Image (tube, rainbow, N blue to C red; front, top):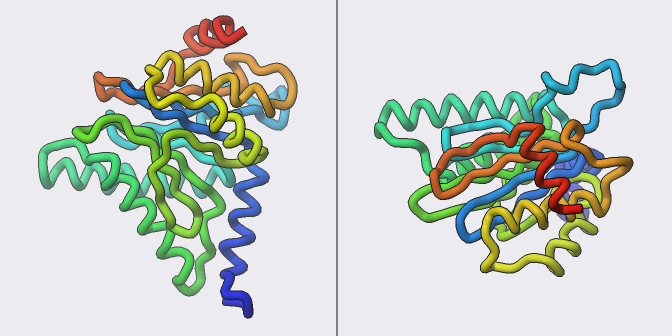
Length: 223
């Protein structure tokens, strides 16, 4: 800790997250949507192999802003924990438990010797017996439930936009439109189905990433 009571390593890690491409999530009455900017640094990169949204369980998915390899480690840990839970209880791990496990790992890395905090913040979208849920997990290990939130570059502007547009009674299709409009507000360049990624989970409790064609249709409707 410094004299003001701050852990500077965490402050620096949060600064790294804020430099990352923006990701956001919106919870509806019947599902959750998460959207992320997945622009790559060169036209030579095969963007078909680049994914920022990942399944953890059949009903839960993560998206990140920050350092990609750090996210990969957290996804691996979360999947192992979810599989262990399934083998023990023979049921899919609830999203609150998935979030708690990830937050525990991230907090551990803030006070262990020889390691550094993770340079990512996560959004977790899922659907379980408590209905649709959206969580944010920060590099400090703090985890909170949200109705709608954003992380990464320009997240403050995105949150302000969401506050003006959010409606607790909207359904999943409306939430997808709001999420795309919010992303477009601070998007650099033209937003297409190839440079964003959209993940949804509905009442069927199946988390999936929308295909390029589905994203294109939603973008056309948003226009």
